[in-house]
Structures are given as C-alpha cells and as structure tokens.
Image (tube, rainbow, N blue to C red; front, side):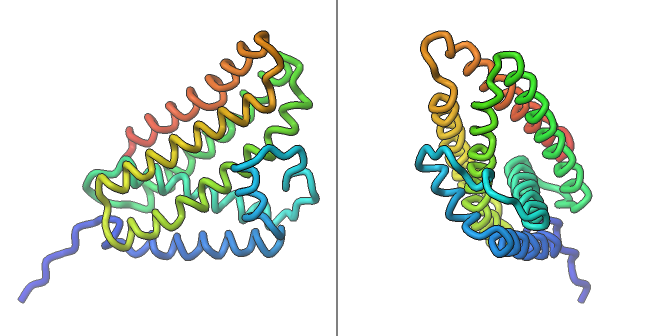
Length: 214
C-alpha cells in the first residue's frame, strides 16, 4: 500500500520543533550569562524604572543569544500569523528573519534621527533599554503559544490570541513613551512622530513584507 505524502505544515515539518528547542537554549543561555534577564523584562512591562537591565554590564554572548531568541520568535510569529497553506519552508522563514532584521535597523536609525532632531538623546538613552526589555517579555509570552501552535495545530484562535497580545504590547509601548517623553502639550507632537516613525510605519512595512513572501 502506497503511503500518501504528508502535506507540508507547521505540524508535519521537523524544523520548527528543532528551532523551538534551539530558542529555548538561547533563552536559558541569556539568563545564565545575564542573570535576571527574564525578571527584569517583566518588571519593565508593569512598572516605570529609571535603571534597567540595559544599564548594567552586558555579557556579549548573552546579548547575542537574547537577540537570536527575540528575532526568531518574532519571525516565526509573523510566519504563523500570515501562513494559510502550502509549503511551510525554512527558506521562507529565513527571508522573514531578514525582514525582521531590516525592521530593527529601520527603527534604530529612526530613533537616532528623532532623538537628535528634538534633542531627546538623554530620554532616548533611558527609554531604549526598557523598550528592549518589553520586546524580551513579549517574546517570552509568545514562545509557549508558538510551541502549542506547531505541535497541535494552526487555526484562527491562535491568530486572535497573537493579535490580542500584540495590541497589549502596543498599548504598553505607548504608555512608556508618554512616561518618558511627555513634558507638556508641546511634547505631544514628537511623541506622535516617535510613535509613527518608530512603531507604526516600520511594523506595517514588516507585516506587508512578510505577507508578500508567505
């Protein structure tokens, strides 16, 4: 009896499971080399702190492991959010990683331009480590959702959960922006510009880019 070939999907492909294992090891490595990475990330999410993890000495390999974890989690989340049917390819995932890296580069350049344009270098220096921690917390929350998705199934419920988490993340980012940069009505303009150039435009471009290749 001839066996029918498995249809390519997040469940049938082996590489997503190996990827998740590798990402778990990256997170463990980051926590070991930079103690309290996880704790500090979630403290940032729920409070305003002037000194963050980013202010202390950073272990190079711990920072690399944490960066790999975040980039790959965001890339896989975007892939699963946009995926409908067809081959669930590691090559496509690689292209999405490049899009995420471009997203990070655009945000970094935009942050530098806005901070120098409005003379916000000090406030930006305080804000960026906290912003980085918010991304770490987001990726830690997304990790178990991705793990369930690639082992149980991909459906609309997962997309709504991801969308809800992303919405809460955006609200928290806006709150942090206001906490750091609000200094009277005159600051509303650059807060709006900061949100547009650092959040909305890069995120929209990243999502559209992923949709084009999935």
